[in-house]
Image 1 (tube, rainbow over the protein chains, first blue to last red):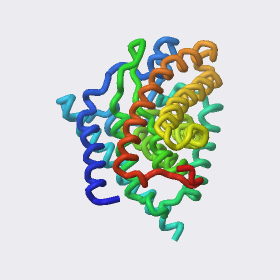
Image 2 (image 1 turned 45 degrees about the vertical axis):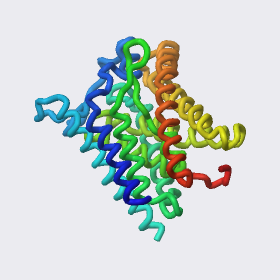
Image 3 (image 1 turned 120 degrees about the horizontal axis):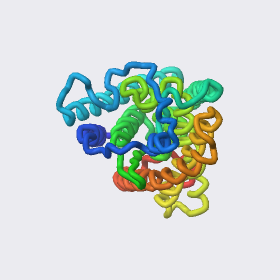
Image 4 (image 1 turned 180 degrees about the vertical axis):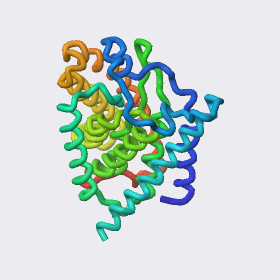
Length: 93
Length: 212
């Protein structure tokens, strides 16, 4: 991939994450079905994530909170992919 | 379709975890980032785009919403092996960082969205490509991505029913109905993205069988 292409693609991913506050707040397909059939109450969380529901608890501004969380998500998977991809290549020699 | 903790019984989530862990292990042995066009950076870029696109829920019927899964998108560009790993990366980060999808349910979520999303849709895509011809590549992409969402919803319904969370007769039609519409969103986003990619970089697409 050319440098230009990488910058453009990552910039676009970052842009989508930054505007992620425009996402529909309706329940997703599974949540909706869970509510309809009454098993939503079984939901529990056994882990305290740093950014639950794509928001940062410390940031009061909802849009900013969602943007920063979104961009952190993009950076996290970028780094994870880089590490995993390098691992695969290294092992193959 | 991220299943949270609490929806699945151990008799379902434990085997799903074992299956998915084995699939990740086997796939990372098989996956290759040494092809001319498939580089580590391409994996990074595709995975970054997918997690961002997954954040954008779009409204569908009945007061619910859906978002891209991206399995077909990843598999068409990266091939089924790296495509699978790409979605696994997204699901792991969503589970650990964003509490989107449970820890116990991670195996089932990997099975539904990464395994079906990547392997099953790649199989459908190459089958359709052979029968429709390479000129209808986008049609093959659209159909494979729509089907992968519906099949994932089917798998999810069986997991819920086997866990005793909801009767199959209730959950299966409800899940299939809403995901028929969410799948249309998946097909639209995947086709638009891949049309763009094929236009600017016609050389980027996994094609081991030389269909293209």
